[in-house]
Every structure is written in C-alpha cells, then in structure tokens.
Amino acid sequence: MKASVLSAAPAARLWRAWTEPELLQQWFCDHAWGDIGMGGDYYWTFHEMGAQAHYQITELTPEVRMTLEAADHILDFRVDLEGHSSRATVTQQWRLDHAPAAEALADVRSGWLMSMALMRHYAENYCEQPRQTLLVQLPWSGPLSKALPFYQDPRELRRWLKVTDRPREILTDTGQEVCYRWDAAGGVLECKAFHWEGTGRLALRVTSWSKGYDLTFLKPQLEESLDHLRNLLIS
Image: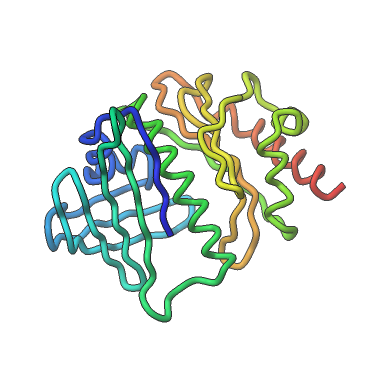
C-alpha cells in the first residue's frame, strides 16, 4: 500500500514534519516521542481512537528515507525531489500472515491518503504552528460508499453540512473519504467513513492551526450535520 503527495514545500520541511515528534503531532497523531535515530524507538498515540503505535527505526538516510518496523507491518517514508517540487511517499507492508482483509485494507489506504494531504497542507502553510482538532462521529451500518457522493458533490454537501463559510476546495478524494481545505477555520475539514472495532463510522474532523479560532462552537453544528447526513442516507 502506497500513498504519495507532491508538495511545494521544501523537501527538508516534509522530512521534519515526519521525523520530528513535536511536528508530527501537529498534523498526524496526538502525541509522538522517541529516540529518532538508527535503531531507536518511535511512539505515536491517537487519543480519540484509544490507539498507540510503537516502531523501531531500522533504516535511516537523513532527509531521504526512514524505515519503521512494528510487530505486524513495516512503514517506509521517503522524500524525493521532483522538478521544482518535493514528493513525500509512505509505503506500508504487512508481515506474513498479518495482511488485513480487503475492508480493512481500504480503510488503511484511505487513511494514509488523507494523512498525507494533511501533511502537505501543514508543511506548505502552517509548519511549526500548534494545532487543535475536533472529531464528531456516529455509527453507520450501511455501505460506506453510500456517503461518498454526499462528500464529493458541492450540491449534496450543501444539503447536510450545516456550517457557516462552507469549505469548497478538495485537497484529496480517496474514493472513500474527502479532505477539504477550510481557510475559514485555518485548516481542513475531513469527511470520513471507516470501520473501527467491527462497526462502520461516519465522522467529521476539523483540524485548525489558527491561534484565534475557537473549535468548541463548531461541535453542535457538526453533530447536527452528521445527523442530517445519516437521515439523507437512510431516506
């Protein structure tokens, strides 16, 4: 599984965004720490999902490539120059007998494509600025694909997304989820659809790097929006 983005940010900045824990936690995980050197350990926690990842760094070419190994899979991150741009690529490979089912594989692929879009946006526009996030979600027993047109189509988005200054520019469309640039919030809006602990989920997550933006007032609007979306999906 591979996810890649082409960015206007310098290659060194993309490398820092991945390899410096204090920067990684401003676009990817909630907390990161470790000994970032050959043979060192790299830890990530995701508070919203109650998950933690532990990797050992088994290959390291500064500002070019880092390989991280976990018990059941291997991550390879690299940065390359491509003309006047930089390309960041993450590849995930599973160890023998640990490959996920097709449903889970689709979730992993979509999740990495969304994350790499966030990394690019952060590196290009908000590097070193602290973030705040807001996640609202609800269970969904139907096919995840049913939500996609409501995420992609601006006319459908207007029917259920009950926020002011609705985002318009799509940063990435994974074929399962959609990430929007949201300048009004100083960040992005992710329209998500995934499985977690055997249950389908529909979710909205806002990431803001704007110092003066208050995410708390958005929570009721996003909860109302998800309710509207669910009603449309079952109607």
